[in-house]
Length: 463
Image (cartoon, rainbow, N blue to C red; front, side, top):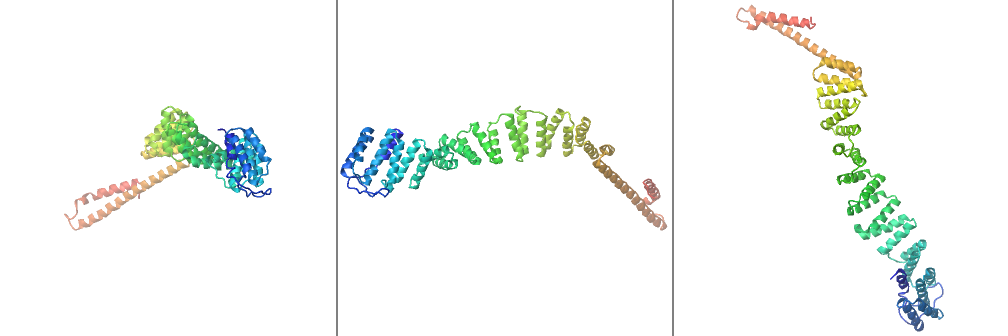
């Protein structure tokens, strides 16, 4: 049965409740009559039978003309108008059908108990004719008079509002439909809601809905991209990162720019070690180009992660790729962090000789430090002088101060030895007065030792 037949039946059904006497009504007042009188009721039933059972609109119209010529009570007049509307629907005269139904309401021929249903029928008629503004008008009247839309009505209201660009109102009804359907809703419901969330700028809600849809279609790449894109647009970058991470772990991301996006995400959200692991893995797999820039980034990631032992082999490879000494300088710094001073000096000298480093003086300072740590004080001094900067001069001053302190300590020890030996000689002289055999054996050499101590102290500048 088509829409026209269904609507025709909906308009007519319920018009006859019982036979009996009725009462007249003034135009615009509420009809108090509730029954057909005998003769009009008989003719009405014939008309209704011809229309609904025999599908003979022409025969029904003939019976309707008889009724229109009779003196009818208000209830009967209302029924005739409704029957006329049904016949016009069958004939495709929807405007005439609406006119009859509106007339029945305005003249008080429709009781309050049936107004809601009549408004709904008019809503359906306007909807069938694509008169969307009028359809919504009568949908509002229908609901205001107690109409309770079911799931399909809500869907119609959502679609009509969307077509009229009432997207916020459309979204209200579409969300109610989704509440009823649940996560197992048809794809058209998902797609419609996604469109409305997009149109109303609700990116986060759209992304959340896309995630539900993704659970049903986990291999649909465009859903993954849409989710990540909407989280980006909603400034929810952490969620976008989680989506990208899931795509990577699921093997969905294959292109170099996609893989680099994941690396950069990890780095951006302060997980540099994982970023480095992914970058190194994908370079070794050949899916990310292994060039100087990528190697430099990998070295940076490992160094930020304090993984110096992992950074060093990377820096060595990068240094060999570059015409500049900058990466050798970094290698020297890394070895210095590990206190591998000989390797640090070797890398730093290569950096200086190769050129292209930002601060040549600083490199010489680091060379000097590596030599100092290996007790090559002469070589360290040479490097610090080559630095010819504040850092180098500071180291030279420190070393000079260190040497002065050491010399002073040696003189102090020599002076102390002289004083101690002199005191020992005094004790020996006192014991000698007491006679032979009282002085210890050490007294025999005290003069010799005192002379040697004084000579050493004088060599050191003492007096």
